[in-house]
Amino acid sequence: MSDTERRVVDLGEAHYRARIAQIQARADAQGVDGMLLLNANNVMWASGFFHIPNERPLGLYVPANGEPRLLVPFLEKEQAEASWIGDVRTYWEFPGSEPAEAWMLRDIGAARVALDGGSYTLIQGLQAQHPRLTVDGGVAHMRWLKTEAEIALTEAAAGYADYALDVARASMADGLRDGITEIEVVRAVQAATTARMQHELAELTNFYRGAVSLTVHTGARAALPHGQPGPVALRPGDTVIVGVGAKVGGYHAESGCTFVIGQPSADQLRCLEATWACDEAAFAALRPGATCESVNAAGLAVLRERGYADAIRHRIGHGMGIEGHEAPWLSDGDTTLLAPSMVFSNEPGLYRPGTDGYRIIDSMVVTATGGRRLSQYLSTHGPEDRVIPA
Image 1 (cartoon, rainbow, N blue to C red):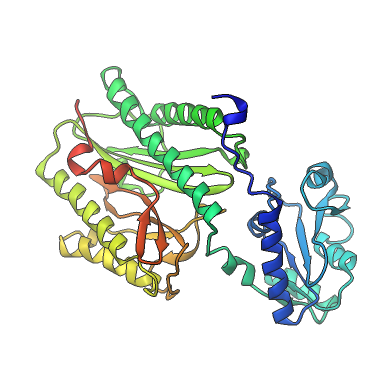
Image 2 (cartoon, rainbow, N blue to C red):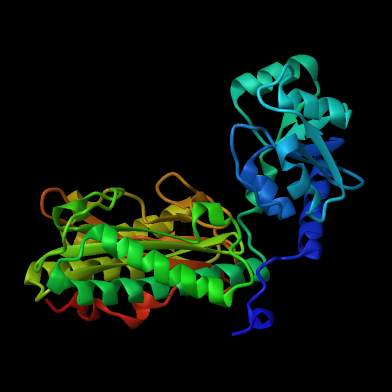
């Protein structure tokens, strides 16, 4: 594949100008002069200025009328000026003699500005100087609904996450004879999948976080939902959880599978089948007008009905987009109504401390008629296909 054939993942100026127009409509409806975005993910979503968030505040000001403005630390000057946004203002350094957010408001010079959020201390301090300053979380809600272009990037990311599972399975099968470890599987998957992405994509947006991230847990360590991979050898009889996240064009998707090394026991097969039945139940419940918590309830009910209530450690899923984990949440307490173009993970999990664990992951999008899986690995590899001969 030549450079000219590589897939372009930059959404382009027209896409981001449409975002700015959305925010301007929000500002007008709220009766403010403009909105100042301080959340790094909101800034990236609205402007396409992908950067490395750190302690130095960075803002995007969107006036109710007129052109947007990037307000950045001086060290980001050239990178910000390379974006499509023509108005870039800089401050010297953090922490500085004047808080950067105070400088931003002074530079903006508007009386009625809405922030997208911040700590209580920050907002209280700024409102002391700007009494008409308000807080508005509307931009974060805008991120819930994806465009066709965003869904296409997410689906591409899901495809790479699926490919990563193929690599993981092959590396485990090949390495069992010599004693492959969790961390060695991680390295093999990251190297192969990243190389493929570099070959097929025009750029790896936000690469500083890694285009591919994953966890590999085996044996009793598989009962740790968020454990760290280590120099632990895979052994016959063990389950191995492989969970993969990939980003294309700054958009995140996931795919994950639990494998069994060697001939599975009847108990292990029941657990594999229970998590897959849970996945299918949650997927079937993903339809417009349903609540997030109802999808969670539908999936987890399957695990409880099969006698695994004590092995449940987390909700069924979460929203995905610019962030790997973002609202809304497929969880108790989230009564958000599902709407077409919302993207979620579907993550049934069983965890039995001291024994083993089972988690599978699908990425899925809400459509007008129900759900659609963006990841395909689990659909094409049923429970009986998740066994690696020892």
